[in-house]
Length: 194
Image: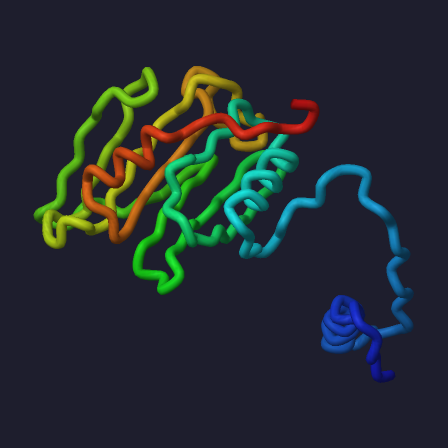
């Protein structure tokens, strides 16, 4: 097997190793370089500033509307983003990582609450939502709200149209009042052509 030392040849190496294991490795042509004509979805989380995250999400998510983000993110936080044309996940974190805000357009699979946790079904943004506090101790334990925002979800998410756009917001390290300040700050993100 020949040695590949060029940058970007990792895929060729992986393919060569896979084919070698099958016993049929031959010469593998280098992929042609192309320029994408539309935003390229991030396949791995990217750490960005809050403004960079909002811009990336706004220009990439084209299959679902509305696209929302919380505006009341504390100063100094960074955003780790995974995004596609259909959905996104963003985790905002404090410098030391002790306080996190997770926000997602997509289907969340949260665990049930602890024995001393609570679940309720408040009205939120005009719909019935699921609100959960994982544990009463400490008062800053993980809590979330999960709801269907009125709008249109990407068909690729396989959501019933009457549900709307699936959103999920959770926090760790924030008290109840801080959580609701973040939740109530949700607003639309400018998209392509806005």
